[in-house]
View (spheres, helix red, strand yellow):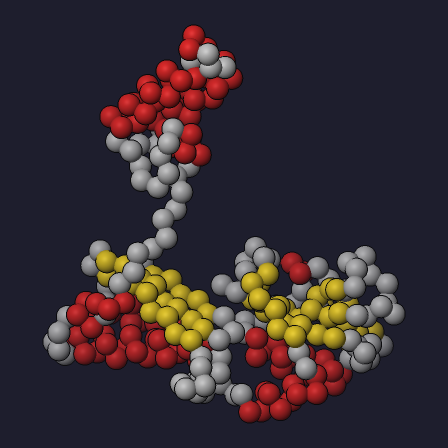
Length: 257
């Protein structure tokens, strides 16, 4: 899941070991709130960009030391890798929060609704996510892979990725309801949404023997090992180090098939 944090820039009048950019934390002193310095991993995080903006607006009204700063809403993954950044125009922030209010309930409501829909469909393998202007839901149904994705545009009048997520959940709920009424099987309604999931690389020991995505049979593994053995064997001009490395990879592969 993504998280959103507030990045504060150009605060040169305060010394910081993190340089000229750092992430929002806060402390109180003598009944006043001050913005503190923080690494991304330690910063206060928010579930949505809008929540971060609302909090930033409150900070501007209550904190005493950030009047001359610039702000960016940073989206990051669970490992603190930055996904996207949105620079904030302070003068337009209040107007944006008023005019771009979400059309739907909170995301927790739709996550719970999605869980119930998937339970009704006997789907156990599914995933979902959203960013600032799009969302997707991926799942496996009767052995087939499907992906629903949606993006905000001027035409559909959606504002946030969370709105897109809400629409996807409501659409799936409608399709599930149609299926429960015996108006075609659910797979008929979603047939146009099939997709091939990204293949994951095999462990390094298999890569060393020439297998990239699909696990080999024992026969295929033995054949590849014998062919490579002829190349790396010291008697054929190979190095002892390569020979030992190949043997270790082969033995590790045997443990995994």
